[in-house]
Length: 81
Image 1 (cartoon, one colour):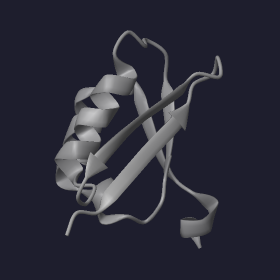
Image 2 (cartoon, one colour; image 1 turned 90 degrees about the vertical axis):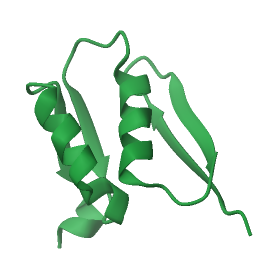
Image 3 (cartoon, rainbow, N blue to C red; image 1 turned 120 degrees about the horizontal axis):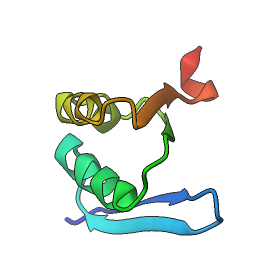
């Protein structure tokens, strides 16, 4: 059984960025999506995340660390409690 997922984001200029995929969202898949989002973007990107395990994956943390402050990851208000 295939599970379809979709992740989306809206840029400061109102552009919708997204991707549809088959299966569960994993850390490496999220890193790939972040790379795509950050391509050609040189300013600080604020990423608000939920409690999904892919958001907390080691691959995501390592990728964020390599960006030297270009990506700021913060929990959503719903998951901060």
